[in-house]
Length: 515
Image 1 (tube, one colour):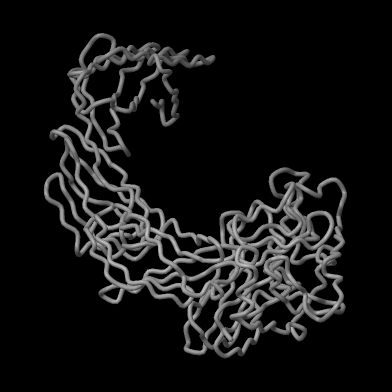
Image 2 (cartoon, one colour):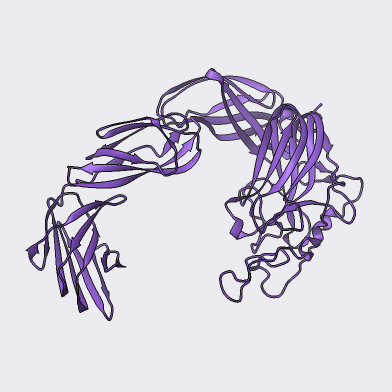
């Protein structure tokens, strides 16, 4: 890259180390051969050039312009130094850069793990360089507990799970500096991974491994608990490694339920490691055994329903969308009826799907295709509780539950969403417990929800949960669950929409209670 009076130009050399650009007023040719880089610049007018190039090494033998040695400077860049050169005014400049030894690399190298454990020490080092200081724009480092000694550093990572980056300013041989990015994923020190339920001859086994995300060996002693079965556990897990598989028999398979089954490891030092082992086929695999262990409480939503699902896209949603979006003839990614513009741009202003499966007979309860979990769906002019950031519905609805000793909750959801709301939390469900604690289920497109009319796709695309077909044209709902692990008193459930252009609805809510 180089610039002339603030205007920047760049090209990417081919594998042969050659690139060029030719315009009416400027042209340049770049060539790299071994230890030498050459750039020839031609311009229509007589100009002075301010050239910035990515330095290929930190050891530079010489820099010449039109055959004469000139001064240069090395400035810190991200992952490399910038080589900066100023040329005298002219219509042509031939720049030649020669590095000391093309066969020996002098660039500093970062040695760091891609995973770090929250609230734990994280060590890293620099090869062929010295650490000057750290830059932490995302605030993931506990600076009071950080130490730097020449090419090595130790920091403590804060409780901020997820992908993050901090930067290390590195000096190389006293001649140049550069910023090296440290990209890492912050996780709990210990995590349960590769969890699954193995079903053989009506017997059930829990199988999983334990991942050590810290840089210290961990001697884990404790108990693994799932579906009322306790299993003594003792594993020595080396730093940044995963244990061998743990497998144990579940004493009473009827305690397992379709969907999420909470696995908890209670370890030494009051550790609690939790995950959900998910299996939506358990009803078929265990011949409906869970019906013998649990009774269901289907929550009556009739006092809260505010929309007939079939007519969801007959409504006009306010406030109106912005006048323009991408182009002057496209008002928004969502039509005024809450439909995806890309799918319904050819004049289908309103859509009313046929929801034949909701026209059930033989009792008040809708029997889902997933293990026959029953839902009490309101029959009448309105059958769903919707929330949205549009004015038509409230942002949040709280649903009284008042079940004593509930073990698990199932949610029958229908959500109108679109690709512009993907990979973000569209809405969330909060379960309020009698003891003051909460369980929160984020609703993220497409991780566990999708558009109930398939949003311009050939099939439902939610990556988890159970897809419940509702009728013709791909209309469907998402059935999700929360396993509380133990019997707990449930006060209420809240459904809240968090993203624009989303309509989040609840058709049914059912609680399982152990008999």
